[in-house]
Structure formats: structure tokens, C-alpha cells
Length: 343
Ligand code: NAD
Ligand code: UD1
Image (tube, rainbow, N blue to C red):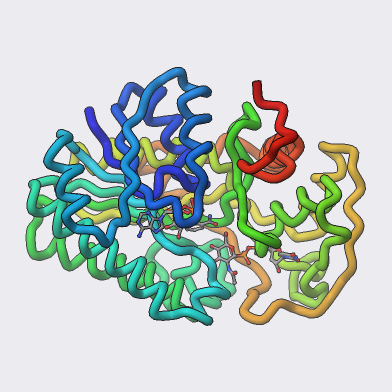
């Protein structure tokens, strides 16, 4: 069965392609490579020993996308493509609204035209806004505090409206918490541009010697050690979650939403300590001021995904950090590494 994966060359998309190929799906990737490297998909081929079709197309290119649907018998879509940097979205809101909303609308129009009405959509825990009522359940009121978050909130609403107008549509929104880690081969992983914004890539770049020390953004939060608490989730667990959601959209009609998190929160200091324990590498850090926009604590209630999708996270923080480190160690410069140990 042919599944279209938009943004399939990106961090979460590439890991999900592995699970799809291993499960016997035929994978068609559409990506414009604006935030990813073709190498990722080469390595997906290497890891799985299976082929996948790759189209270098911007999702805003309606004709190009129609061509993909015309030449393939797509049965469902996993839609990862989009911009994802919160800070950048505040600087360039139009860029974010145009890309994230425009590309999804174009995609849905083309899907409708070709009678493909099954979609798994990448949402985010960012739609819960600044609430500190944890654990976060799917049904609490939603709020966005920046343009990136607003694109996710608006897209969830648009996709619901599409189902109301045509109940053959089946869409599952997956609200990811904090995706980290890498495939256990060390061949694919997260490859941020420039200096990382997120905690774990920052830590691995300190460990490899690219950055001097980590800034811990505040130790005066109302948490057990004063530092921010998050629900880190292994990217391969997320990948498995997408297969469960795909199964749901292919076999049911309706709109569903699930948190994908472990349900367990860890503080910044706990992440640092665990990284040091599993790798034996000390991480120098200093406590600095809070980062604007950060909240104290966020973790999922993942019960709904367990009960309705039969999914729960299998991997713990140690696995996440060990795998993130393996990827970093094998690919000092990410996919551009010349010193990589890849055969
Ligand atoms: P990523 O940037 O690694 O992957 C996104 C991919 O989409 C990239 O390969 C990029 O080139 C492609 N893309 C972007 N715009 C496109 C367009 N117009 N046409 C074609 N391709 C396009 O991001 P990711 O971390 O893999 O995230 C995947 C999805 O999950 C995104 O929608 C993101 O908002 C969402 N999400 C990510 C996180 C996270 O922390 N990584 C958390 C919550 C939600
Ligand atoms: C960020 C995004 C969120 C996205 C998530 C997962 C913001 C405001 N939010 O969330 O939309 O879904 O990434 O990719 O950008 N920290 C440090 N030092 C650092 C980096 C982070 O102390 O150098 C702390 C943060 O204050 C936070 C924790 O580490 O307490 C995790 O931060 P990060 O990885 O950036 O994720 P979020 O802020 O949860």
C-alpha cells in the first residue's frame, strides 16, 4: 500500500519512514529539502534495505503535487512538512502562515481531488499554550502564544472543518511532546541548522566539543529542582505512534487527537545528569536567566493513545540520550560530516 509522507526527509519523518518500510508500506516522500538533507533518505534506504520514491517538490506547488498523486496510488498521507522554530515564527509570521497553512490547504485540496481522504497530521504540545495544569489531557482548552503554535491550532481546526463538510475524511492529530533521540544505528538523527535551540542537541554539541557550555535557562521555576520539566519522547517511539495512527485513519472515518509523550517529566538538571551517566562525558553548564516564553512544567497524559491506539512509549530517557549521543558522535557535523564513520 502506497503512503505519501510529506517532509519525510526531516527529523521525525525520516525515522517514521523506517517504520513504514519495515511494516511493508511503499513510501513516497515529498520534500523540498528546505530544512533537511537528502542523505537522510539515503540512509533510510541503507538501514531498511528498501527503496522509497522521492519527489523534490514544494507542497505549495499544486501542479507538482497533482503529478505525484496522478502517478501513484496513494492511499493515505502522513503530513510532517512545515516550519517548526518558535522564535523564527515570531520574526517571520507571514513566512510561517504561508508555508504551514498554505501547503496544508494545497495538500488537502489535491487529496480531495484524487479521493484520498486519510491523513495523520503532526500537531504539537505547543497547542496547550502556557497552562501549567499537568498532566496535559487532549480535551483541555487550547491556546497558542506564537505564530508557529497558531499554525498548528488553525490547522487542527481546518482539518476538523474538512471532516464536517465531508465525513469520508479521516484525520488523526498527533500532539508530540519533546521529540529526542535517534535511530539506534546512529545513521539518522536530528540535524539542526546552526546553534541548536533545543536542549538535547545543545547537550550533544557541548559533549562533542562544538559548544563550550550549556546555559540552563532558569533554576527558579516551581519544580522539584527549580529547572524546567518536559516530557521527552524517543523519536522511534513517535515513529511507531504514526503507524498506529495510520492504521486508525485507514480503517475508520472521523477526527481523532492523541498526545504522544511518555507521561513522565524530567528537569533540565536530570537530563544533564542522565546524559553524563550514560556517556561518561561531563557537561559544563551555568545557570542563566529564564528564556522568554518558557513554562515551568509540561508533560502528557498519554492514556488516550494507549487505550485507543494501543500505543505507549517503550523507551526511557537513558535510551533517548544514548541514541542521541551515538548519532552525534558518528556525525559530528550532522549529515554534512566528512569525518563520519558511515561505511
Ligand atoms: P523537520 O524540519 O526536520 O522536518 C520537516 C520537513 O518538511 C523538512 O524536511 C523540510 O524540508 C520539509 N518542508 C517544510 N516545508 C515544506 C514545503 N513547503 N514543502 C515540502 N517540504 C517542506 O521537522 P521535524 O522535527 O521532523 O517536525 C516534523 C513535524 O512535526 C513538523 O510539522 C513540526 O512542526 C512537528 N513537530 C515537531 C516537533 C519537534 O520538536 N521536532 C515537536 C512538535 C511538532
Ligand atoms: C520547544 C518549543 C516547542 C517545541 C519543542 C520540541 C519553544 C518556546 N518551544 O519546547 O514549540 O514543540 O521545543 O522541539 O521554543 N533549555 C535550557 N537550555 C537550552 C535549551 C533548553 O535550559 O540551551 C531548557 C528549556 O528552558 C526547557 C527545556 O530545556 O525547560 C527544554 O527546552 P527545549 O528543548 O527548547 O524544548 P521546549 O522549550 O519544551
